[in-house]
Figure 1 (cartoon, helix red, strand yellow):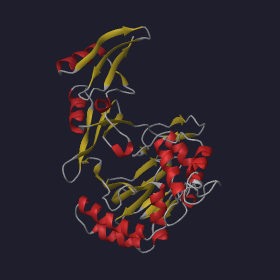
Figure 2 (cartoon, rainbow, N blue to C red):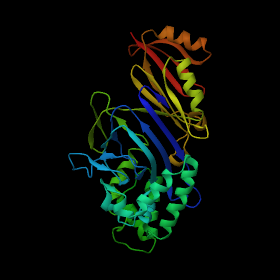
Figure 3 (tube, rainbow, N blue to C red):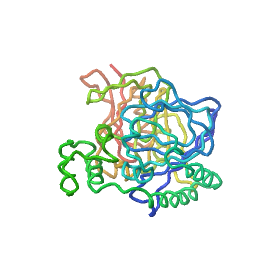
Figure 4 (cartoon, helix red, strand yellow):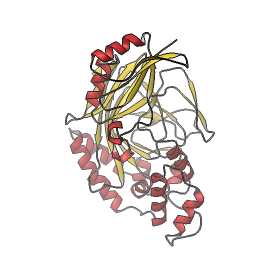
Length: 368
């Protein structure tokens, strides 16, 4: 998408059979903005490899570092807290998302050495870092880049170390449980593999507790931008951190239709719909009262399913407007399905309920 704020392009890639089940995802990206970009990257429960096609990037070498260091291609280990990043306005490259066992095989180092750290990719894979980036930069289209990347990663991983069955089991167990599993249970399960009854050691040794905490609090595949006044966010574990923005992400099977409905029926402002090289919609945005909502595609790999697919909703948005009756009339005229009409509630607001085309419930209200 190109507008007054510059050019932003995202392309999602599915790792091929050669690395399937080991590499989680590819994301091609391109940014060309008139001013520097600052972000607060959130923990994801995965390791990230950035293959840059030449542009610089700044990040904290570790969470204790007070200033940002310069990188080109790099690896970001599992973090248990947000991390600030920045670039000068231009970025082009590929992000590779790896689960810890695959990262251990690809990078060949115990992953506790990368916890809460950012490391130059060349320091881990040598000349392959520059070779990979050069080969991929010379290819014009994202699908062909992803296909070549499959082969490059598969070749290196075939020569890399193999995690023990105990550690593979521990990570799968943590992922399935969303991190809600005790370390003692992991140790007991690992012992059942007949490898060892001692505390698991090796590639997952140090990040395990951090990964457990991150998985418990959920995963995020986008970052928080520095744009709004500082807010305090506190997690149930007692860990607190300062955030600059909270972005709502809603999952839709048909992002384009959802975007058009929210704009035309509810009066949101369009933030654009972004497509990959095949014309498939990968991302959409709408805004209202200065707040942005990202429209995310259904993604089985991350357990992201739409409301219609689930047959139930686990939450809803309540949006305050100046005149709830006028807003209701607009929705009704547009043909939206009204769940309940404007009603005076005992908790001090007049509200109505309406569903979107994929059966997500919305509430609009005016305080009384």
